[in-house]
Image (tube, rainbow over all chains, first blue to last red; front, side, top):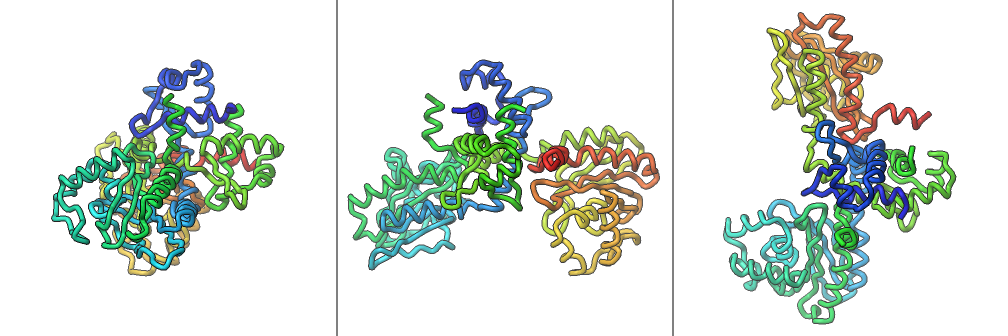
Length: 258
Length: 258
């Protein structure tokens, strides 16, 4: 790792829960000597990547990140960043893959791709919001998303889409716990009578999931083999999609926590 | 300048108009040898600060900037960053200073401070939008903001607030040109019959102004001396406020262009 990468690695220590870090804490967190850490911080400050509070002397992310984030989002909006990932996964699996983000109490589709490799296809309307209680994406949000989502459950009667849709809080709690244990959610004909889907949460910079990525297939095709392949693919692409939201690749986080 | 600062300086080359840069263009823009530039880019890519298009091989701002921008805006929203700057300027001048951002076809106040050093004060409602045609802030937006603002002028009759408010396009064009020449706009009793104000544009990462900062005083106090002091103060704080929007300090830009 070069000097620049080492200096920039200091910025990985910032999070929503830890938005300000003092020199001593940096020293403790990254295990380098204070003089080196101070030199890195001075260079990062010079370039606008950190700024120091004039009173408390703690550091926080600097204004340069706002400028670069604006350029990135203006010129390469999220959709164009995630579409190739979703498309490649769909082609690999031969099934519909869709990625959606939490918006209020439902999921808004951001990207989807159906490779049309089969005679039957799952109909997906990118303009329609996905309900939390009826879809695999929604169950993974209830399991890994912000706790506040649960306040919407039970506020109004939940629609039964297929006769198999979970519509009561105890059932949803059970499904959400199962998803937390497994790391993915499964929806077996709960939104459409002919569709089974598997979904995983997608984490951005926040501690709770910001969205979900799912594979949906006609029930007749979603056998054990396809489900296993779908889970493998989702496990691989969920962190990549999360990175497009400004999340960190989990591997990096683990390396740091070690 | 240390290695890290030199590597990060590459990122200053990105802009809304130039969101992607190839290795050769970096080499040409920063005047360093290609091997060094490539080494910097590799380290920046490793840390997520640039990402390379797999097909065209050009570089663009990477996902790490989104993560840090989210942390900064969630934990230190713009308002808290600009308030100390506005307050210090107001205390220094002894008059009301306000900062507002373009929102649709008007300016939305973000921060203001009145030091109440005099028996009379300008009333400022932070909840009310500032019209472009009636205020110094608005004239500086017409002069330095996006061209599209002019399409709103003449679309509907403009309100005459004081009998001295410019309400026709030719007059506004003339005032806007005068502001462009001077670098600031002056509004002499055009919004309130007793108030004179001076404003300057604030530039974020975009080429057109994103907002304006103004000094407003009762007409009787805004003499030549105060106007000159106000202009000096605004000239000093406008780039600082712009930096809080993710803009670059002009001094840095000049140094780079030199």
